[in-house]
Amino acid sequence: MTGQLLQLLDRLLEFSMPHLVAVPILVPLLTAALMLLLGESRRRTKSALSVVSGLVGLLAALALLRWVNAPETGDGPGSVGVYLPGNWQAPFGIVLVADRLSTMMVALTGVVAFAASIYSTSRWDRAGVHFHPLLQLQLMGLNGAFLTGDLFNLFVFFEVMLAASYGLLLHGSGRLRVQAGLHYIAINLAASSLFLIGAALLYGATGTLNMADLGMRIAQLAPADRGLVHAAAAILATAFFAKAGAWPLNFWLVPAYSAAVSPVGAVFALLTKLGIYTLLRLWTLLFAPDAGSSAAFGQSALIAIGLATLFAGAIGIVGTQRLSNLAGFSVLVSAGTLLAAIGLGEPAVWAGALYYLLSSTLAVSAFFLLTDMIERWRNAGMSVAPHERAGNAPFLAEDLRVLDDVNLDDEAQALYGRAIPAGVAFLGLSFIGCTLLLAGLPPLSGFVGKFAMLSGAFSTGGTSVPAWIFLALLVVSGLLALIALSRTGMRHFWTQPHPTMPALPALEVLPVAGLLAASVALTIWAGPVMRHAITTAEGLRTPTAYRNAVMGARQVPNPAAPAEGPAP
Image (cartoon, rainbow, N blue to C red):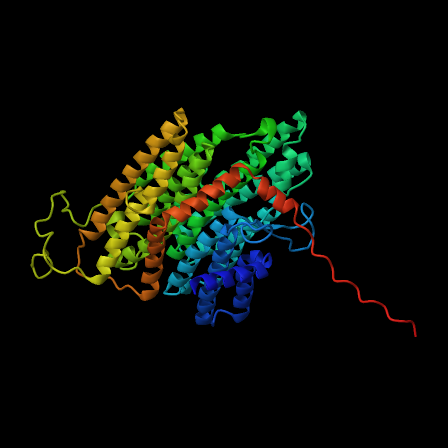
């Protein structure tokens, strides 16, 4: 019965292709338009539409993911899906491309967005106006950027995503959000300007902005034109480094992400991954092994920036005690790890990095949501605890002596042996799960991803200095993350100064539990996921299939004109 259902699903996928490629873009776009027509008085309807839209987008992404991973049968499942929205053949028209890498990112976006949309319906969507339409437009921009096949539309989807993120960052108002929002807007406007300059230079040197076509033309460039292409690539990379949170352009990231409301922070964890995805996609297409003297251009710079970002994130994570800042620095550690792994240039390392990308994004998104629940419990809804402002700890006396009754409740009864309330148990276990994932400890997927990257770096007998530095920083960053998160966990769970119990609505518990369950599933089914990652990395190393699929996509012929009848 299961086999028959899977066969039926495959037939439906074949029938819906290639139009299914556009669904992750069209669904949030149409949902946002419908929400704007409803007005702010229909909040419950908007919340329901947001959750339903997130579910539909997630199902479409999973269907695309199944399609690209099915056995190849010519133009059937397993091929690269190419959709020509304007029915103009590449490189002249808009093109959407669904391969293993882009569908994986769209599926990851669907999981995180679905969890964030459910969580927001509990309280945060009422903190300001137009929350759900902005969230849908953000998803449209993210999915479009992952699926587009040309630089111009990549810029368009980037701007759609950024315009929505400006409103989402300011959602809930407050001085800290406005201050962080101004810095966020300024750095992204500067990065967008660099994006345009780099794209214009590339177009001037090659005469095309289609990514597949760019890779083919760069291999045929005259030596005199390669300097201009390299300069354009460096300018583009600077823009993407800023969006990915790479050092030294990441000064804005932690204040902005920590100031945003928790469901927005969870979705923002995807924005840095978009910058990393774009770097990986363009670097492997433009500077592939067949690019002549341009092959692997900028590899040493990519490794150096990645290692510096990893070091900065590790120092930052051990130097802060605020939960939201811990989540922000965890994003930097993840970004630095991925950039350094990409720069090593080995498909085996890329495979481990792609697996780590999934794990770290799920973990950070869950941590952003969990942070809100813990802070609301500990600080009566305040985003910053009073003792953090005053500079003293709630479990120490003013002269830094441990209080004698720290292990007693209000009735002076010993706390040992008493049952842990369900709400506290959920928060504590979820915090432990996030700690294991972010620190990369066994047995969860964070450890599997780091081990896979290191195994790939040294499996070919590589003993290069960057590989050894990467190993050292990966271990040290995990240790510092463990120290910082353990210290914060003890402060929040072992030193509770009052006996109030957390009130955890189901709409908040389920998204966090779902993201952590997805991380556990990633660990249990590590084999199939790693096979997908290995196949994806091999395709990135040799992008011939991607280029042939894009450049070989044909226009749909117009219907035959009806035959004319006899003249009257």
